[in-house]
Amino acid sequence: MLNYSINEIEGLKILALNGSLSADSIEYFTSIVKQVAERENIIINFENVILVTSAGLNALVDVSLFAKNHDKRVIILWPEKEVEEMAEVMGLYKYLIFAKSVDEARIKIKYFT
Image (cartoon, rainbow, N blue to C red; front, side):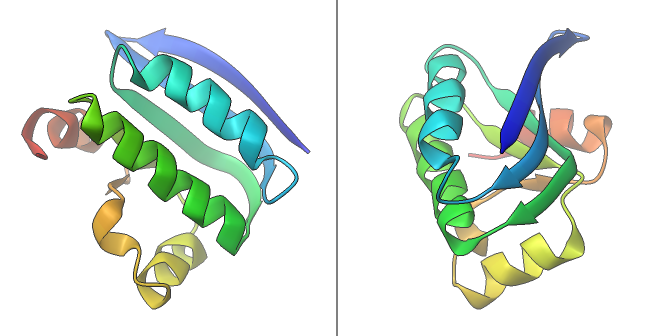
């Protein structure tokens, strides 16, 4: 199960997730993120995500590429180390933007192309 809330902090849209990003939740997840990413950059707070499966990681790539095609960015904030490692093993790391702080996310939104 995946729950979410969307907040705006200092002009940044932050989607806070709670739960698992897996095959059961990816349709719901991609729908939410794409609605925001059509119009603005989005930071996805992974602090309370307890599980990310390969399907969930592929969904992250999907929304990241969708945002990029709309000249926007998706930043993954505070992911578990295992998420970054899985992205690297699956060859998907180059499609994702990770950040360890809101300030780092802000910089990456501004400078990542």
